[in-house]
Length: 341
Image (cartoon, rainbow, N blue to C red; front, side, top):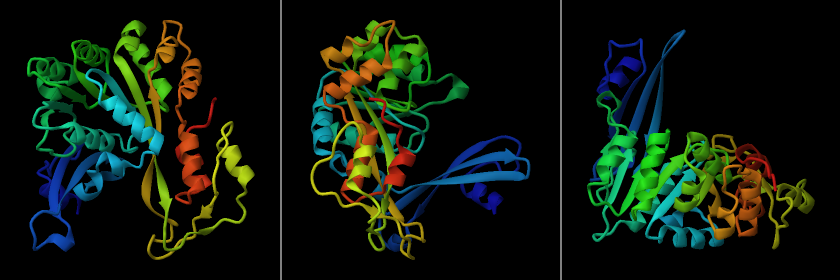
């Protein structure tokens, strides 16, 4: 079975000693006789002690490509995000672990910004989804075409908006900063637990803190929490208002509280959950927040200042989803870091 799938993905069927990557394009069953409806499967193999292991990631444009309005921002975060991406230059970072929806957020944002008057260029590894409105470039490590080299070449392509797949090293970070200093809007991703840690991560890479303060205009941390199955969810009489307040400590939730619990049915394969919702924490670099970025920086101080400026932590965003009846307390505790403010 593995060999057949590798053959469909144009991978080396004989090679079983090293990891391989490939992709398959197919169609959804309900669109076999109609145009469109293409689904891409990303293939990845890994040699293990008991043979070759394969993972297939499904990229369905109907679910993966969304508008900014469909991402699930709260009203406050949506307004602040629109104000942030409307700025003419600076660096906007999206952080979170693998599989937290960073690419979906970036694609939705870039699609909203890409018009005929705007040149949007991306450097990706790999190109997740083909988008005609962008100029997308693939990273090739074998020919020394990395993020830094691609970004250096992009600077001569007269871009207005640049998206770098990930800032992994100092060279890429320095090129992104140079692009922001010369009047470009740069989007990129980092793997950090929360938004304030992204600033610390850049400093750890070797970026001077005065350049971080001068170029970074905002950091969006996000998670994906499973949503309750609408067919079987039931009210959780054991969850009290005090439990929700403790979840959102030291903030207090207002309005009607409608806690539900996961039950399980055939519709959700007896998991109690169906679909996922985004949880967002948006740190906007105000003048007061920039004062917290210095060589002896304290991430906790930056986080406290960001909360004073209106940032809502991931745990609080999850508590609000619980209060709305979208997910459960257990799911929020599983998918979000604890409150440190």
